[in-house]
Amino acid sequence: MIDKLPPREREVFDTLFRCGESTAAGLCQTMENPPSNSAIRIMLSRLESKGFVRHRSEGQLYIYSPAIPARSIQKGAVRRFVETFFGGSPVGAAAALLGMADKIDPKELQQLEQAIAKAKREQRR
Image (cartoon, rainbow, N blue to C red; front, side, top):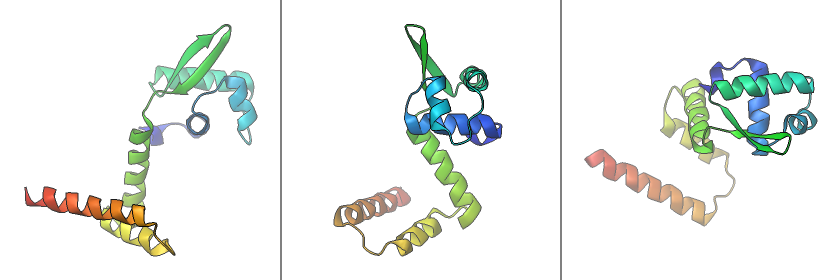
């Protein structure tokens, strides 16, 4: 869904996603190589019509924010990453990520153990 956006619209959306919410002028200031303010407004309007962005009015300002939950975007990005670099194997991706860690926080290790235990329980069903 997000990956099918034209590159410039995707850049505007990604910047808005990182900001959480912003005006067109704010995005223009935040982006490294921004298009004109009017071009950003046009792209935001397109993104809104496609369902990626919403806005609210504060006086004469439009404040834009992502219309798609962060979790949904993250899940899609991770899925594409795993498919591209690990042949679709979440276990292979997890093993590679764990191999990168010099030290794992005990709380994070406990979260991993709980996720593995949950996966085992669901496998038995």
